[in-house]
Image (cartoon, rainbow, N blue to C red):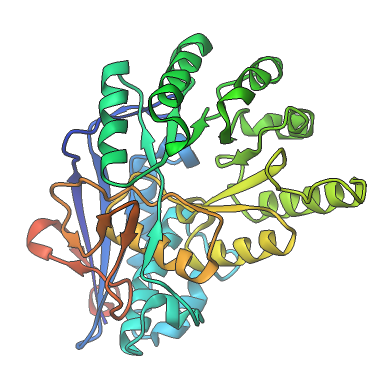
Length: 385
């Protein structure tokens, strides 16, 4: 098998990425892994400049990728390599596992002439999935112009990034969006863990008249034990940064079970509109598609509503999350990551009328154009002995 690493900066047309967690981001520093078996090619992708999500610098992730892949046994069958990716004590960081696993899964599904969703067992897997769009921090004019553009294209699930300025500014912007679009949109906010417990208890009641779908990550992860206090405010809370591994998934599943057991018979089901704690699952936090699939099934069994999402990422990583959505059929999807990219070497996704779709073709359903990426190194078995 021929394994090669590639790198590139991806840029958006007309969108500036700015959140309370990330600050301003000018480009997506992206790494690709391609695997060629002489007939099929699999591609994996991971974004490097997301230290604000998982704590690893670009240099740490790239070093981990190069260290492990230089010692990888590329002569093993792809199925054996896939098992090795998730072996205990493998030493691979979650972003490294995501990169290698995605390329192997893409290759395996292509070898079997199935879409990745079908290869993972989906029996009814529509190729198009409804996605939200996010309104990043900027001027109020920019926010409204961006919202107008999304709604005109049929994207009516909007999420406002908050926590950069004061709450009065965030509240005013939410009110302006609701006044402009009325019930023609669903509206949510992402706080990126910027509120204190006291601030959340004060602010959540002020948001009830805006009919928000959910409030994402109101508290920093270390304050998760206080989340049940916020549920009584009546707006669903969605965890993102908190769900960074198997232990966090287990805690949320247990919390859901405890909440259901303590509820009165006439009370709404856990996770129903009106309260609850929901989950936003991302491949790069959990280490790939298969861990995310396992987490989704566990949380669904516990009655927790789900979003399958992503960072701002390119076509390959977005397609991987989309294929997972086709299997899981989550309550929400956040797949806007590749919308508007101008220089992605991977192509194939289509954004139209509020949905993102991928051809019903083998693997991820996307195509990698090596001429549009920067070659880093080859990692086949002959170079690693």
